[in-house]
Length: 215
Ligand code: AMP
Image (cartoon, rainbow, N blue to C red; front, side):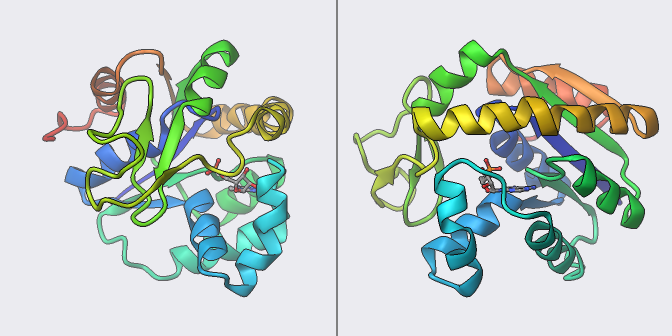
């Protein structure tokens, strides 16, 4: 059983790296932002509660987030473990998490702010299947269309200059200090996220002493 947390600023590749780790290690990838986006897209009650907050780039309340994480983890479909992405985002969430779960390691993807803007503003998402693209180095074959399902590619509602400024501010003031809490208790592997995605994956696996990526 392997239990990891992946942290990093917006656009640092948490989703991509988590998916690569989850694939061949049979980990369940739990992305709190994806759960919220799914709820917004499917017009659920939870979606209605978080839609405007997310679009503005603000953080959803801790009570709602903790409820979602608790419910997801009680499904117990993670026989081989999980990798949680986008959580914890502040001190309270970190304390809540550490009270209930022991973790094997924290992956910290490091990226300078200057690179964040460039990456985030070039990010696109398939509105049907949710696959991620980046117009810098991972464009679809046909512009605006998903390679996997043909769905329309759209920018995330919070990938705008305005919302990004709010998200970066919160990341530096609230999320970054969580790393210090983890450093005191857990193993934190800091990885240079400027490298290409295969190199980042390799560095993560070396740091956590995991078998090489099978792709
Ligand atoms: P992400 O996909 O991780 O960038 O998350 C998208 C948005 O979902 C964030 O900007 C927040 O509005 C909300 N969100 C996701 N995870 C959390 C969290 N742990 N705490 C509060 N809000 C969150």
